Image (cartoon, rainbow, N blue to C red):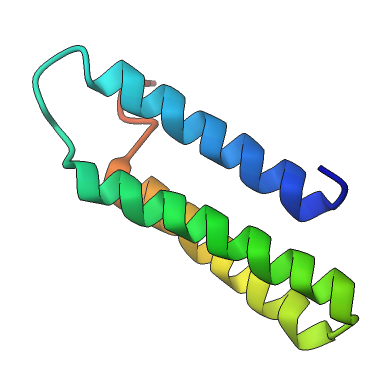
Length: 87
């Protein structure tokens, strides 16, 4: 746990686990493959980011940030973690 990618992807993954555990208690709303896609997105983001630090390649930083943003967008659009909050 030495890079910013390690910490941010671990935080997102921990939130994903909490969401999965919370949703597994009631009627099934989500499918397991949706969580797998988000988890693989976290892992790939972490890998690309760590490779960017090791190799010093700016393009890998940009790819890791883009993939991390796409993973977060997938989580918010498909899994909708904020559906329980009403204004």
